[in-house]
Figure 1 (cartoon, helix red, strand yellow):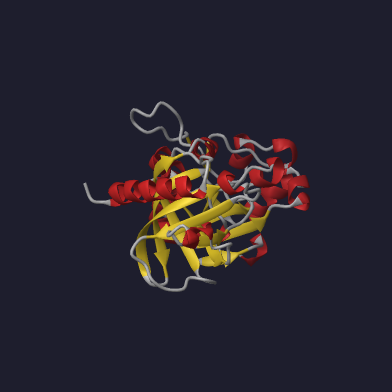
Figure 2 (cartoon, rainbow, N blue to C red):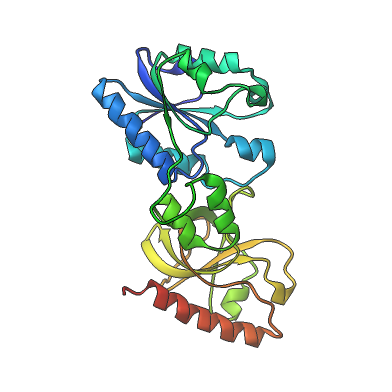
Length: 298
């Protein structure tokens, strides 16, 4: 997949162009991109995805993101996208009027344009679907709804589910487990003192993380391991900083400086305050047992 940051760097020739923030690359996004890719193949053209980093709502409203840039590009590549135009979303980009954005699409030689029905663009969200039609025929896909779900598949909804700790609900809308990746940094080694050594993960401050204790699977440089994760402030020891810690089952070795990818599978419990470290240790043992059970094949 060719990665570019400026429309002028796109290879010449007509293209099918799909536009959107695509935060999370959820099932709705996947459906749109698969339709666009089918059209691109039918017309013997490449599919170019025009997207933004960070997503517009992250920059404009301070919301957290579901997928960072590396996660998004990996998912786009796996879907078969040939060209990804990832434009920095900053103050200058936010001030652009709709005509400048339409100029980008013309310079890309858009033959067909794909967007979701809620897509708007340009300063003040002034640009609409009729403006896109003036550039090229535009396929407007309705928001995807899953059978029996009762709501549209949207990034905003996934964020809300994660804030409630409903990682299984979020996974249904994503079409895969929600995951987060980070670098293992040194912590205070409290977990080791309690008999459950943890890897302390450093992730972007804007990454959405579900609070609580979870059964997870962790991808390491040595392979994949079942694990339990705790995301929270550790109230028993008067914590003030959000921590993201994972205890890998049946693992031995040094993980400092390594990048881990953690897939959230099942919530065990909310974060709690305990009267003593002994009470906390006993609860962690129960959490580990519950996590192992959740990870075991049915």
